[in-house]
Image (tube, rainbow, N blue to C red; front, side, top):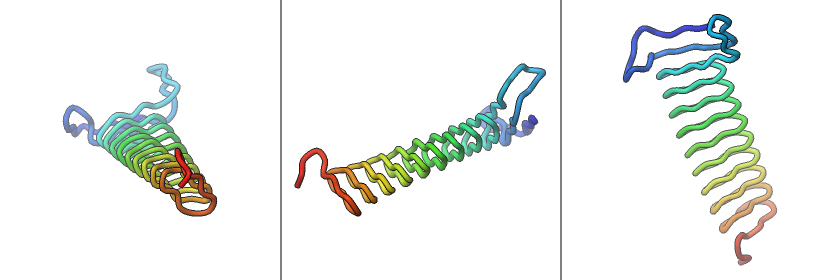
Length: 129
């Protein structure tokens, strides 16, 4: 399925959807690019897809300023595995990390590793205090 809005901003469509294969273009996965992008691979301001990159990204693999997904990399990352400035997730790695396994300068979690760890089992790194 493909849809691209006629309205554009900065040369990108306001809304773009690309889901599934496109036999005419011989594409195995839909790549959506737009201000709001929804697709197998989504790239845009707000991106939703299996792999999503954008200012705000939602997906199995998500990257951007705010990312929510199974594996997230962002300034504010939320997900199963979250890597970023502020990371929240099952495994959170970042400057500030909150999760089951939290690794960061400031960390809070069941197993917390960092300079200032808080929570269950604490590991002070790099030097014990």
